[in-house]
Length: 117
Length: 114
Image (tube, rainbow over all chains, first blue to last red; front, side):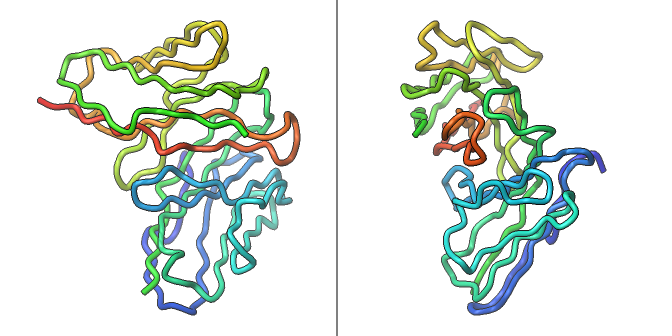
């Protein structure tokens, strides 16, 4: 497909469980972003990858959250010991470049709705 | 810390022009201003981006005054399908730093009425 894809679209888990959320960016996009969106709020930045490395993970709420992008394409967001407060929509976006001063459009996926019971 | 302020919500009728203003008093010299649209259960979608003066594309116009401390998104002749949340976005963090990132605000909920 031409757009950013995310799997699964919905994930229901129990408190304390481990979950993995996957993002397939647009082919050729070097920058990849993860956001979290709670009901009624705007997306909240979590982490940004430039290539394989996490250039900025300052948005990750705590050490239960971790993300990887081993080959510079697909990324996985991992959440350990899930809590009810982790329930949200997790959005992934990619862009062709990431420069603070340049025209930079982020393309978003449809998100994964995570529900922690 | 670059922050944006937008009205929480707006109502309009079909066929009207809608203008949504965003304040960004601390915008950095090289920051661009970007607007995204989000429908329920979808990720945000890029609408328009600009640096100064006026930018127009097939769906919207963006007006940016000389001081760049605010911007106005203009949607001509809205329809029911334009009902969505609209986000104004500017960069945050030191220029060209790995920590540079975009910060979304709470957005403006636009409701278009028949």
